Length: 534
Image (tube, rainbow, N blue to C red; front, side):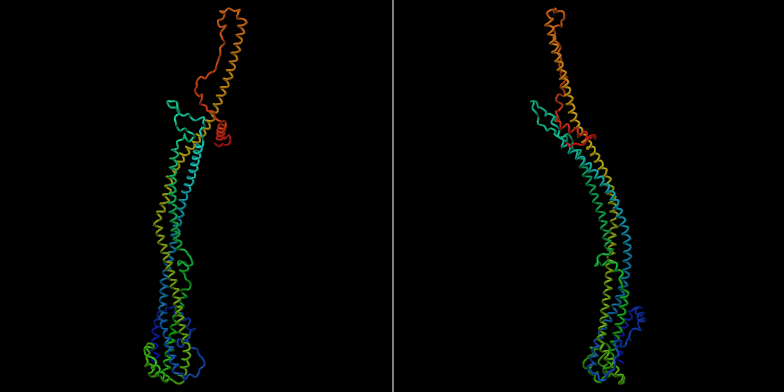
């Protein structure tokens, strides 16, 4: 038929374009499932009992034609199906390459990250050893400093007993000069060495703390950079674009197969609609007055490409009444299913759009994953550039600590010497108190002995004088005066006196409590008792 041949041009172009885009998978699918599908021609027909359709109204035939012509607008869905299929295939192919590249880079980055983690742990270990040594030394320094400060505090709290205080010097007129007397043991100490040592300690501690902060910041920055790389490479949150499942989506081959099947089925459905339109044209040509009605109601622009008004008025092939009845019967059955076929094409087209959207979403996820990996690679490159600085920072910290440790050790030696000096000073002062008390006791004992001896001498003198007087009274008158020139001489009289006045006022009169406390402290220092408070 001429009309059928013109209409077939409409579908053949689209079908050729679609079928040429399908790969061997569709051909394989057709071979496996050809027995399960209906024949292309009249694929949406369903048999029913023949009825008398010889007198189908012309208006009904025209309505069939209008519906068939409107249904042929589904051709753009078939064009779209070819585009979708090609886009899906090219997207999957390019994405597969991107996924392979992403996985390779990810594995490489994990290997590099593992090495850098080992370097980080090594740096932390080396810095930890130095910091532990510094902590021990600083604690020893603090202990020595506390000991020194305690001794200084004891010197400040130990007041000089009034008996030891020197008298103010006198001027030419014998008046006391106004001078500051030393009231505590600390007044006898030169505190400049203490100030100097403590300043050196503060500077050394500040330098060590600054170096410690610097190396801690360096290691912390390295940790943060590595963590940043790790966060990019590993799973994040549910909304993250960089997840492992994005690189291996489930059902992509199945979705591609489904796209190909939908495209093929849409082509078959459109071919059926074209055949139905040809049937409508043929029925109109074999119905009296129908062609004129079409010419009256339609123009060539309103008909499909290749079909014009003259087509309905041209010569027809001979057809028996039985053939016409069968044609009208099939036409009516097919007309009832046109809308369903169009809806099926639209549904399949929408499904293909949705499938392509899922593939594009997968593509976008894979691109985001690749961007994340590339970003992690840039981070790792930055870390590699900064790694020598981190290594140098730890080495500098170790070297710097060695220098400062020597200074701190020198300060501690000086502090310990001052501590020994101050402790010996405190102990010597206590010994001086005890010594003063001992001298006071010795002098008292000497004075007592002298007093007792002087009393005995005085008593002997009086006894001798009395006896001499008694002898002279009884015998003196009978003896010549020149018989013993010492007969009338008085007895010798003896008296004790100081050989010198040195030390007369040098021994202070100390309270008994002061002497007892000093003696107690001295015994405690030598392990002979408990230490007392000053």
